[in-house]
Image: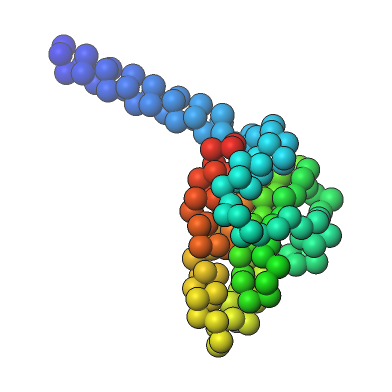
Length: 159
C-alpha cells in the first residue's frame, strides 16, 4: 500500500513540474509589448560617452540588408570611426518566426567584417569574435563592443 502512495506522489510531482515548465515557456514566448524606444533607452544609457552614435533605419538596411518591413522598430548605433567595429542593433519584430532570418543577416555581416579586419586589426577582429547575437521573443539583440556584456544586461533588464 505505501509503495502505491509513493508512486502516486511521484506522478503528481512530475505532472506539476511539467505544467510549471510549460506555463513558464508559454509566458515568455510571446515577446515584449514595449516599444523599441522603451527597450533601447536603458541600453543607450549604459553606453560609454561617445562610444557609438545613433544611426537611421536606412543605415541599418544598408549595413545588414534585411527587410525592414518585417520590423516594428529598429535601434541601431555604431561608432563613426571606420577602424572601430563597435555597433549595437536592437530589432523588434512583427513576427517571432522572422528572428532566424535577422540573426542570419547579422551573422553574415559579422563574418564579412571578421574577414576584413583579420589581417590588420587584431583587437577589432577579437571584438567581432566575441560579439553577442541573441533573440528573445520578438526582439533580436546584436552588439560588438568592449562592454557588450553590460549592454546585453541592460537590454535583458529592459525587456
